[in-house]
Length: 587
Image 1: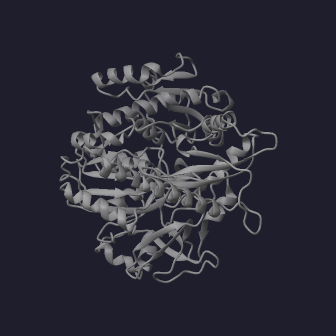
Image 2 (image 1 turned 30 degrees about the vertical axis):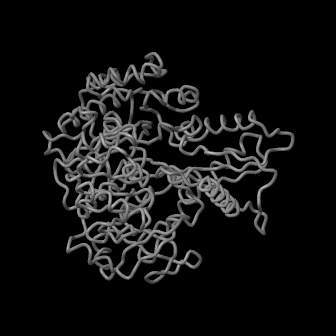
Image 3 (image 1 turned 45 degrees about the horizontal axis):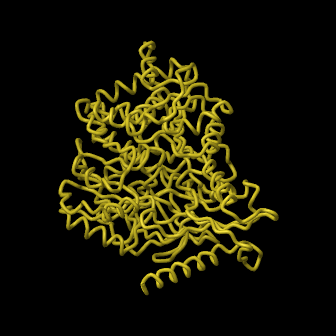
């Protein structure tokens, strides 16, 4: 399905939508032509002397960033990468990850973003499904790559250390604290260190820029969609690039030289699009944080003085619970933005009070979106930030609430499924036409809508309120975790007859998984069995998906039609927690 070609016409026809009054007369932007790299060069090529990236105090100007992107692009070409080849990037937030991402875009290749903490099987599945031919990876992930790489089409692996772009003293310290113990392969034809790889670019003296169309695939990201089965999401160049123009309307105070704190990872749509691509295409500085330490949040703010702090609710929990924040002055902060999950009214109020007491003159703004919508799609800017709400569609986008059973659009304050339409909606799921057609729906006007699987309502002013997920899904530190996927992995152990995974509250992560397990006949309930199950999960699930608790049961509660009743288990867990809390209060 193509990007909306008649966006301006569609926007004009939808002016009866209540939220249009918040746009303050701003015009709907046109969808940019070209690739992500082409748009970056067009937007920020004039800011060559401004700082593009701040990495542990090392300042990389736009001039240096463009030079490194070009060198990496030529190294890719020297290594045999062709247009539309897939290059997987399994990285934390380092300059090399940003450089490799844009270098792939420059030569017309497609970056496939992989979580560096993914399990062996997840990495293997992603490399095979996307037909990746090259992998750029952080050295910490090598242990999960070495055993599976020969089963894929990847012919070259480039190994990066988080210290590669650090200032010299910081780099030495990192080596002795962390890198010294990390296993890395010797340099071979297949494996190569970043410093050696980038020099290959010096051998290529031809122009490497490949012009792409706005509807061409820009990147492959990952999500469980609305069903929970891992999927590879194809996002368009134009869909991501227009988010930059839409965000500029909703964040009018931002200007060249502002500083975006990039804690959210590049393999996460929010981190890639809003925290890296948007600021870099706006002449801003991106302060890259490869590993977030909640106890040092105060030092991050004091040292780098960001003007924009984007994050998921768990990050703001860490902010207000940091004991060293008392003396931190946040007067330079222009925007505090929350996404990935929602803050309820009470938490919203608590964060706003915290910001005010730390000399920040702005309230936190919530947003809403999904990977299938290229990240943020709805945003509480331009005065639409009603307490507890997630705002209005970014200019040029549309939304509606429908009855999940009939598909009929509902009126104000009626709860139903949230549906989104706009230029940033995905192309579809890679090699999964069935689920693509289930999630994307074309209306009689030719507009494509995405079923979010989320429930909410739009008030009489056109402001969206998110309520809950229609599908059973957990949010762990801002990441979507699907119990059904964890249950499948548990079943694969050969030890489990029946199982059910629920989410339990966590002080910082919001939720963590808890697994209830019925063992197969003849399997002993013991510490050894639990250890074996844990070990299998650690190998096949990302760290944030791992169950916090494993509970063995003789049976699991069932519904009237024989399905495991996860709701009953949730009630049991709530009762146990209440009883535990009561006993603690008695003491």
